[in-house]
Length: 99
Picture 1 (cartoon, one colour):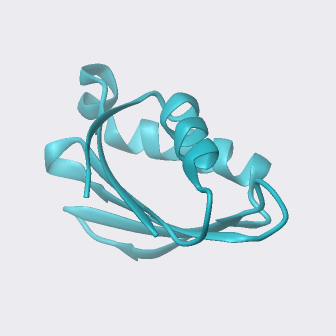
Picture 2: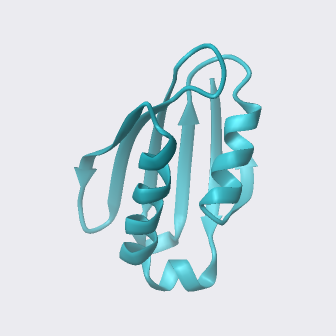
């Protein structure tokens, strides 16, 4: 399992809903199970999706903290480093730390 904390760009943090709409489209294009909003409140959004970067499916949970412009990415599976890198690049994130 891998857990990352990432930051949105200043521009994206100023328009979190716009970033979220773009992110959902990016994720849906490559996910084997498209992103679904499990929780959507004024302060946080929890998305679940699944990806298949190799032979096995990798379930993902992405928690967006709207007020802070931060995203927690949790990937369950082995050898998730390529998927982590793709998510950071595709969603224009900055890695803050790995938990």
